[in-house]
View 1: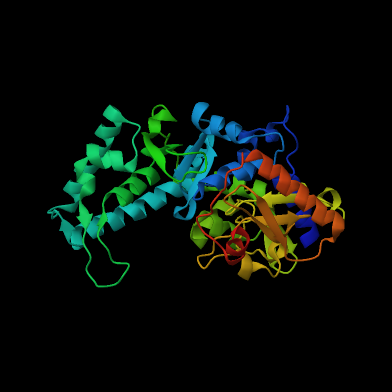
View 2: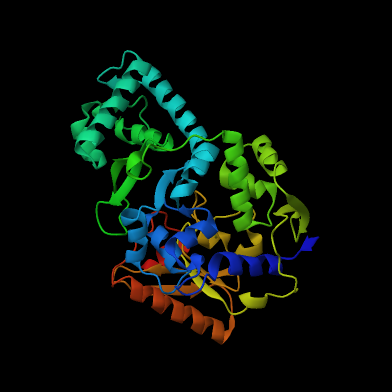
Length: 401
């Protein structure tokens, strides 16, 4: 079966972007949006909210906050590619065993190596013993005084103030405390969770909580190989048809793990326009018409690091020639304007709350008007506040002013 770029864009819009107005449909809830996309990128805190608001017109910022911090049906985890995501609570065991556990092992090995080989203040005599004591102090502090910020944890768990000392004269080689690497490790291991923001909804600073605050009893253990199969299935449901390289990149697995996970699923081999071999779940219903179908005329303003924009390794079929203006040097995509399932421009929120956009290609007067209307809708939901991206792209810098 040969699948055209238009067919892929039509499915992208139907399955990931056009989730309808609020109401009884499951995909019209905050949780439903996350289920459709497997996970929301959460490195840039505002993107979690904006990714939801872009897809369901009737939802508001407070609806997202309620799902995350009142109902606690969504959990912020350190997972695929050592990246922060928000996932559904019932997906946490799958994501943890399928991705986070391996990240945790790498972080633990690296931290132990640094404790054993780098100079510290005060000196560390035995890395294993020291790290175990540090973990216990963090656990006790959260149990007795939590939730706590990183700074508050350092005050309650003095071992976190242990510092790694510079070993070179390089500008980046500076004194750094144990706090950040240890909390990242405990997060990847599923022992602590980033909870409520310490500022407004767009803040990137959070309170730390024990994982039991979201999952009583902790994260259930799953076989890692089986978890990878389940995670591959969820990803293919959301992002297929795709290449194995797309799945491998998104998960951070090696090629052998990727092939094994897909081999355990009911998939069909397909030919993707411009890419060659790809796979799709046997249960996936693909658009049969050659054109865009219901994707025609669809507009969306997606935030930086949105899961759709970051969902595939091979992106030309929806990105076109706009990579240089829309990505930063580390490969992070900025806020993007979408028209009929492809990227056609960028947008930003200025400090005064104004939403501005720029089209990089001609989409006609109706398309331009639709983009302006969507920008006004998003702006009305922000309450006049600005939103700052943590990873500014070249075009974002121009638009924000």
